[in-house]
Amino acid sequence: MSAKRILLVIGGGIAAYKSLELIRELGRRGIGTRAILTKAGTEFVTPLSVAALSGEKVYTELFSLTDETEMGHIELSRSADLLVVCPATADLMAKAVHGHANDLASTALLATDKPVLMVPAMNVRMWQHAATQRNIAQLRADGVTVMEPDVGPMACGEFGPGRLPEVSRIVAEIEAMLRPRSKRLTGRHALITAGPTREPLDPVRYISNHSSGKQGYGIAAALAAEGARVTLVSGPVSLPAPEGVDLIKVETAREMLKACEEALPVDIFVSVAAVADWRPVKAADKKLKLKGEGKTPTIELAENPDILRTISHKKKKRPALVIGFAAETHDVERHAQEKLARKGCDWIVANDVSGDVMGGLENEIALITRDGIDRWPRLPKDAVSTRLAEKIAEAFAGDEDGLSLAAE
Ligand SMILES: Cc1cc2nc3c(=O)[nH]c(=O)nc-3n(C[C@H](O)[C@H](O)[C@H](O)COP(=O)(O)O)c2cc1C
Image (cartoon, helix red, strand yellow):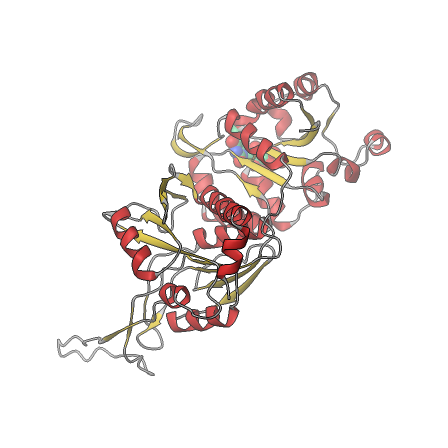
C-alpha cells in the first residue's frame, strides 16, 4: 500500500485518550494522521500531545486566519484518503446527520469528498437512545461506515454496548477502507428482498413478523458498494434507502413477488425478506367488530406464493446466482440444507433467530452451498453483508462463464 493519510476528528468523549494510541498504531503501519480536535475534545486530550504523536499541526478552529492561509478548511477536509471520527460522540453524529457546519469538525465532515468512518463511544443509554440509533441508520444510508461499539463495563460505571472498539479493530477497519476497491460486480444487476410482509385481515389489522429489514438493506448497500446495480424490494420497515439503491416498497407477499418478477432479468437474487407464509383468505373491507357475544372469529388462511422457489425455478430469466435465507429457531443447518434442495436455490444463508437476531444488530450465520458449510463467527449485520457481497463477487470473478451462462 502506498503511503496513506487519514484526517482524524477527535470528539469530546471520555475515550478521546485512545485516539492517541490509534495515531501511534497507524504511524507504525506507515499511515499518516492529521488531526482536528473539537472544542470538547480539547477537554480530554491536549493539542500538544496529538501534535507530538502525529508529528503534524493540530487543527481546532474554523475561524483561523493563519490556518486559512496555510491550509483552508476545504483543503483540510480533502487532504487525506479517509476521514476517521474517533471517538464519534453522539453529538458529532447528530450534527453530521443534519449537515451542520458550525465548527471545524462538522464543516470538514460536510465538505469532504472522501469516505468517512465513524467510531462511536458513549454511555450505554446514549448509545441505545432512539435518536442515536436513528442517526446511525441515516449515516449508514448516507454511505458513512459506522463501527459497532464494544460491549462491557464503562467509565461511568454502567455496562453494555457503547465502549470504543479495541484499537486493533479500528486499525483493521481503517486498513480495509484504505485498500483499493475493485468494484467486482460492476455491470451486474442484483435483486434483494428485505423486511417483513403485511397480510391484511381488515383495513386496520394484519399478520406480520418482527423482521427489521436491517440485514437485507445492509446486503443491498454492500452489493452496491461492489459496483452492482441494486434493486431492493422491501416490505414495510423504517429504514432509509441505502445510497445508490433502487428501492421498491411493497406490503404483501403477492406484491413482493410481482415486483421481483418485474425486476427480472437479474444476475443475482438474494431473498432476505421474512415473507409471511400465509395470508387471510379474505381481507374484510370494513374493520371486524367485536360483537360482545363471546365468539371469536375464525380466520381462514391461504398459502402465500413462495418467492424464492418461484424465482429459483424460472425457466427463462433465472438469475445466475439465487441465494435464500433460512431463519430457523432449531436444527438450523439441517433445516437450511433441506430448504436449499426444496427451493432449488444455489446458496442458503442459515441463521439462528432463536435469540435477538430479528431487529438486533448482530447475526451468526452459516453459508451453505452445494460444496459444503462455511460457518461464520457472530458478526455485526454490516460485516455479514460485506462478507456475503465479497463471496458473491468472488463467485462471479472465479466462475465467470459458469455463472453468467446460467442466466438465460
Ligand atoms: C466527562 C464527560 C464525558 C463525556 N463522554 C462522552 C462520550 O463518551 N461520548 C459522547 O458522545 N459524549 C460524551 N460527553 C458529552 C460531549 O462531551 C458533549 O456532547 C460535547 O458537546 C461533544 O462535543 P463534540 O461532539 O463537538 O466533540 C461527555 C461529557 C463529559 C462532561
